[in-house]
Image (cartoon, rainbow, N blue to C red; front, side, top):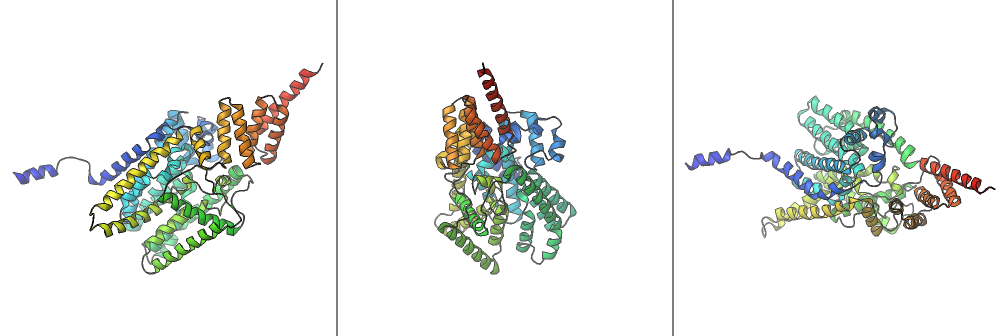
Amino acid sequence: MPGATRGREERRPGIPRRLRMPLLLLLLTLLAYLPALNAGFIWDDDRYVVKNALVRAADGLPAIWFSGGTKDFYPLLYSSFWLQWRLWGDHPFGYHAVNILLHAVNAVLLGFVLKRLRVAGAWIVAALFAVHPLNVESVAWVSQQKNTLAMVMLLLAALAWLRWCAQERLRGYAGALVFFVGSLLAKPVAIMFPAVLLLHAWWRRRGAWRTTLLETLPFFALSAFYGAVTVVFQQGHSIKGQAVGADTLLGQAAGAARALLFYIGKTLWPADLCMIYALQPNDAVSVPDVIALAAVGVCGVLLVVAAWRGWRGPLFAAGYYVLMLFPVLGFIGVGFHFYSLVADHWVYAALPAVLVGLVWCGRRLARLLAAVTPRIGMWAAGAAVLALAFLTAAQASLYRDQRTLFETVVEQNPRAWGAHVILGNEAFSRGELDEAEARYRTALRLNPVYWEALNGLGIVHATRGELKPAIELFERVLTLRPDHAHARRNLRQAKHQLRRRAGDAEP
């Protein structure tokens, strides 16, 4: 009978509806990032994994957590690398596979968080996040597993907090606190999360300000403590007295405005992505800086007016975006500011806010055009996801080795002295001393006090037997960075060879 047939068809086994989008996101992420599985180790991956003594030591876990022997206090990240090194050693494939999986999990968790927040088009936002090229730096760079791991913990903390807000069960609150701590221990990307919780209370829990403030006090205390620890480690290991960022408040504000607009622009038009951008911190405020400050100010005023009229959602999204980026906007010294004011991996946690706004605008436009083409919204979303996936695959393919990646960097930003030094190191490892020297000298022309270029040039001279200029260069490195262990060892070896040569020359 027809009715019985329909009943049997409805009971036919298949993938549950609630799992279809998560599984689709996992598959989509894997396909977009297939080239990253063939990527190698780059830049600082050696200090995180390849040459990290604590990661390689069988008894390294206690030291990772309690000795302070790592350059950053990311014990959860280093513990993850400690475990992974026992599984695949120095082969990069396993680390990249884990990072891609973590990113895919983040896309799924983001979809669930946005659904709980009742954000329209939640799974479209999650799909765009999964394949957006701005995330390639976080996913295809092994050391940025700190980003993806911290984001997993942050999203789990958000889900637990939303469960606490809905049901007020202690298990939800405890889960939010535990996952928040886990996120901090992977990377302090979640350090502004307590402020986001207060902003959420203003948006959704109206009238619960005092209660939410009391509830978030432990989160604020943990953020303050971990922020202080991070500053100590940054000053002691990454910055070490070098000039990073602008010195004046106006210069910092201008840099922050430029960075905020820069990330939005790259989200809307992800072309010419670069590991080291030419945008630098600067105390001298230019006309573009004034325009950027004015644009951010006008947007802020419009968002406040919209919130006053009852549209609180846009201000919450903008507030989340600014809060998650605040630690790297230039008001606080960060080591990477030595190279660039902006970096793709910094926007990883903040990106969903811009994508939510983009999807909201797309949905409004689709409604206007629905009378002409009813399915235009669906087709446009699908086209956007596929286009971004192709761009992501192309961007991820650049990470197959350091030479490919950083040659692309210097093509896009010829003033990236850090990239020239890395290419010089690559040339030296191939025995191409003239090419290495040219790269180091280019870096020194761009930045005369860059100690790594001085050290590399000194090694080239020492390899050629030109010991006196090598010694002078190593001494200059130690003047700039007295704790540079490699330069100290190189200096000692060069002086020893010079003494031996002098001894051999005596009659």
